[in-house]
Length: 328
Image 1 (cartoon, rainbow, N blue to C red):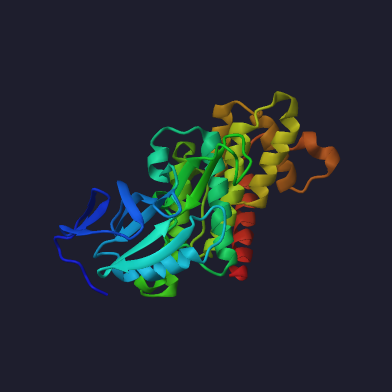
Image 2 (cartoon, rainbow, N blue to C red):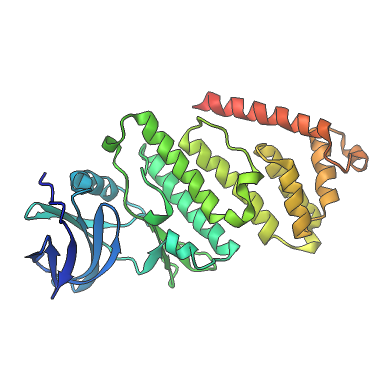
């Protein structure tokens, strides 16, 4: 495929593309404005003269032109409400471009700069996880699932989901495996980006201190672990109901034991800072279950997490990780 010159640049003028100072018209489409630019391509809003609708046109530059067709085939094969639709791929004088649905929103990086509430960030994580699980069910990976490739928009009519915030997202650009030297490195990158996305979405929750994520686990397992762990963030921040103290305490303890990868000191620190649910209640129920005590011994359970309690939890953590690795 033709490589563009080092002076390559793309823009638009009077509804046409200007590539390396040469004017090109894409038949049937009028370019309106630039709406995004990345390392490998520029995206324009355009008007489809035949179907009388706005679309997005992605034009690859010299850094991305070799991967353009493979990337487009990959994302076009994914038919899901949380993945952007692709309508066509073509070339114009050896410059690759694709026609896609247009999303009236912003990428995840810019969205996050607007100091979004914890509730909205939790909703975006839920949709992000759902979209990736769909891709993994097809025995594929996204390849580049960072916040810049998540398009977040206000789903006013709740077409794609029915959450109270009327938010939705679309996964955009996919990575292409041929640009990584080995499958192992490709999967490692997928795993790394998923973890980084969780850390960026919930940076204020000090998640680097909150839990330990094991190395060398499958990207699907890591996503599942993060789903469970982020339930702790949801429970601690969004289920403040003083009439349900016992129920919510049980829920937190169950999360800690079902996914025993937490730093218990940080967990207790965050619970104390939130002042709900009562820390003593959490500790007693956690010790009760760690020590496999009988039901009538609940009130005898310790109300501190001492070194013995941490040692038992550490053993659970090691057993949990060992079982996960066996699933690989």
